[in-house]
Length: 276
Length: 90
Ligand SMILES: [Zn+2]
Image 1 (spheres, chains in turn blue, red):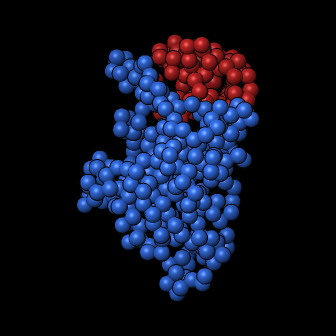
Image 2 (tube, helix red, strand yellow):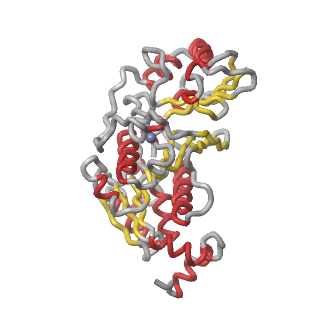
């Protein structure tokens, strides 16, 4: 399909890049990306993918916009408080770029719906804020063979990496099991610098665009970590693990189930109070 | 001295410090020293049997100790040890 005059102008700064060109821009226009979570990470992901002219974007989030979200979740505005996040996000995406087909799912991803939803997309991006979801997203990506861009943030730090199921290290190759509840605090408990979500989410969006275009080196088999207070990026080499419970040679996870987070017998936040 | 990088979720134990310099010849020795300086560190990194918890990864010079000798992986002067836990915020 040929570009319209308006599209040629809209995407001109992409098309002028020799690595993208008209051909690459058409790939972007045909790509189908599922964004899981319309929060801190999901906001910049959704906005940059919309601006880039992604063909179809699925957004899944069960929550409504809360006032505490606005410090970092830039796809939502003050007037959106109380609205379903997916509706608020879909409206901004359409305002930014009417070319994008947006599909909203106002629900939680679970073991029953994940594979069916994934089936309509080529790539998955994790913008969720809890361990059961992050493990489920990884496991579903493995079973449906969809490339996944993982991301996580906490306080001033973030991490991300790309998973090509069956080929590169998956989340469970690195973290075979969920941390028990309370061991690793959430942003709600420990806080997060708002702009950090923008940084990590934007890197995730960049990595998916690279995969779509087939350019550069994907962020596979390495974790990129960002340390905001030191203003430092670090890269850690990782490997696909033969002992991975999911993608290893003798997997214990053979079908998609909801990962369960055990309750922990100590809480680091309480420990902090005691220590001081 | 060996530089040990402390991840965000464990910095509450180090008074906010992101890096500490320690003496030690193996990862196991470093963890014991860490626990003496910052009590509570070991139970967060290791389980009751003393094995590294499965949601924590330890790297020497950006190489996973699981692909070396685990807790017995030797460390020498100038090595850098990173502890990377899973983080869930988004
Ligand atoms: Zn794996």
